[in-house]
Amino acid sequence: MRWRASAVLHGTVILGSFIILFFSIGGFFSHLDWRLGWYGHPRPHYWAAGVLACAWFAWHEKWGWFMLPMLGIGINIAVLAPFYERIELTDEVGRHDLSILHLNTNRGEADLDVLDSFPADVLFLQEVTPGLEARFKNEFPDYEVAISHPLTTTQGVAMLIHQDAAIEPELMTVHHMPWYNYRPLITTRVRLNDKRLYLMSLHTSRPHHDHADAFQQLEIDAAAEWSREQQSFGSEVVMVGDLNLTPWSTRFQQFLNSSHTSDSMIGFGIQNSWTAFVPQWMGLPIDHAVHSKGLVVLDRQTAPVEGSDHGLLFVRYTTTE
Image (cartoon, rainbow, N blue to C red):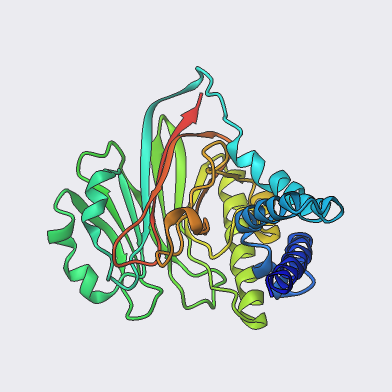
């Protein structure tokens, strides 16, 4: 009986190793089928499962099978390693910095007290409801509401500016990208170290079926076009929000290329922001801040928030001289 149980477990580990390898490779071909995009997201989990599989085969001295999970581990390490490559800051950085905090409030259910531990110049809130907007004055006594567009759905947004922030927001606008999209997106222009900087609170659809996946691509393409347009006039750009994508997904990498931006998480390790139903180290990073080349990331953190299925994202930028 013990031998039979061991044989079943051994077969399960072999099958699991094949599945992990298939998904690890398939994630690079998400343009062929939207499901491959989903399967390619949990690469850190594939890496961890591969390590356990290698330990099993080594323990039982099944060296022929040992290389199967090792191949999956190698693929996923190659994808994840760049996020841990520290970036050395040069002396040519701006005198002042700009801190941004983003939070998906889970339709106003999030416990906002944790935001006190991350004082920021700009707050971008998503899933803002009319009920949450009515609490702004009590919840954020040190902030002024720059623009708010609450909705009873998951698409409401707001931007708040700290009273002591050394910035003056200009041209605050609610955009729809593409133009027929019901979801509002906030954009604003500020000055940072004599450079013109455009900020966007970006929230894209969850690609849980083929039509939603196609529409998310339209949203991503429209945001990338907006970014290129601002940069063509000499402005810097930051887009921050819940993108419902992991940073190693093919679509996100294409977004970086087409928007002429960089991922703020590079050099800070993998900082998970979703989902609150598991410990943070077991989650995935789907809340992002991307920026144009004239900006430098000084600090980046995520933290869990009670009442929300997303953690907060805090990023501090300055300009290159």
